[in-house]
Structure formats: structure tokens, C-alpha cells
Length: 64
Image (cartoon, rainbow, N blue to C red; front, top):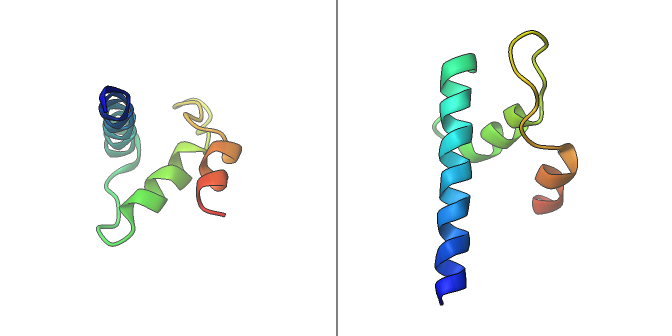
């Protein structure tokens, strides 16, 4: 039970970090598909602005 709670909290922290990055550097997200759009944006490197936060492997394994 404690492990599940910890994993849930870690996921929440990562998701919030990604949301803040997306809002700061790239404007808002589509309300209907923001989870997928957020993952897609976090695999993109924007030269001179920010590095990619996630890899394609991490995001695409979840949605196969």
C-alpha cells in the first residue's frame, strides 16, 4: 500500500513539472487531450530553449 502511494506521488510530481514546463515555454494544452499532448511535447527538444524531458521510448511504451 505504501509503495503504491509513493509511486502515485512521484507520478504526480513529474506530471506537474511537465505541465509547468509546457505552460512556461509552450503556452497551454488542449483540454480534451492534454495528457497525450503533454507527453508528446516533453519528448521534443527546443534548441536554445530547453532539452527534451522524456525519451520517445518512455512515452510510446505506455501507449502501444
